[in-house]
Image (cartoon, rainbow, N blue to C red; front, side, top):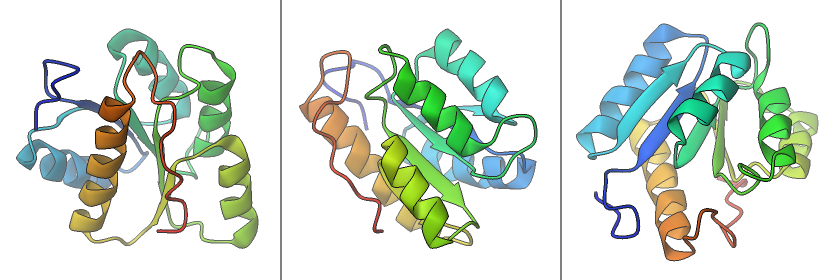
Length: 147
């Protein structure tokens, strides 16, 4: 899956404190031709966003040092990453967490445990929308929080 707008495979940053889950997500995305970089928490993820300029970020909600909601808020507050697609991948399904994620502009919310195909499909959809609306941002990305 090479984006005509990008002229390279898409790059996804996977941020989760569980190595086994990062590996599962990475393997499934790489099978789809998507490049992946990994971070163990939100703080490391923000550093990698600056270094790697990913096309999409997946965030676990509950992590040490910096949780996914705090990282999402930081991404939305920075004009350079304000429109970067974010997929929250988490065991937290409480309505308050979903509402907070929505208010921060998280594009999709996938509950653990999940089917890898569901996550890959969500990511591909958001990447396609990003390419369709590509400048340096993904303006107009669909809100798929209710997945």
